[in-house]
Length: 79
Image (cartoon, rainbow, N blue to C red):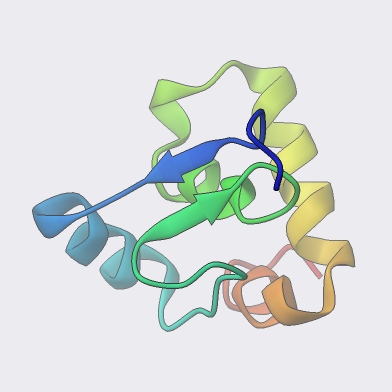
């Protein structure tokens, strides 16, 4: 149990927008949940205007260095 573990839950139109912007992706938790360790980067990359520049840079590094996120990083031209 990790009661302090967090992340983002994205549903409906916003999740559809993410898929349109990023292409297909896999998350650790699945079902629209984006955990705080790595998956959060997908939310940041899909909606960069909602995050500070430092978070966007961290998201780019995360997507480029986490194996299951690399397909998104490649599609976005990050690697």
